[in-house]
Image 1 (cartoon, rainbow, N blue to C red):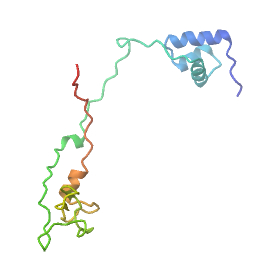
Image 2 (image 1 turned 120 degrees about the vertical axis):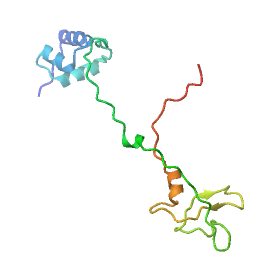
Image 3 (image 1 turned 30 degrees about the vertical axis):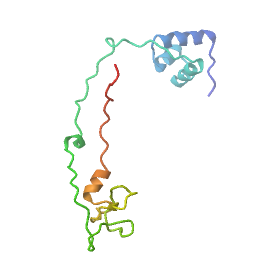
Image 4 (image 1 turned 90 degrees about the vertical axis):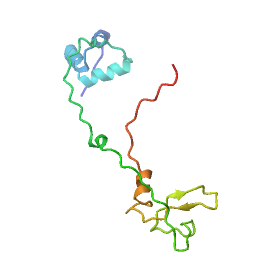
Length: 152
């Protein structure tokens, strides 16, 4: 392939057609002997950013597809019902020293306090937590809402 020679006249034509809002394909056809990609490349090298675009009233309106709510948004969230921590045979709760991989490792209380312990119930398969604590820990991502406007 040979490189396109951009004469001053053709560059001016390109600038005019670009600012009129023609697409790169339309400009390529109008100039002749140049590809759409060549037009796009030249536009970028020239730094042509601004271009006329049809006003909203002139643009053709395309029918919008009806919005179908996803199944995820239709299901209500299951309530998280936590049980009291498991009491061991000696009357104590599961601690750092007594917790095992077959016990829920949901922390309860302040880790710096002597009363700190873990849930201790049977964990859900593949999780370090029981069913209730797994639901609490792994909540589905909520749809992002616009932040509340607090200022003016």
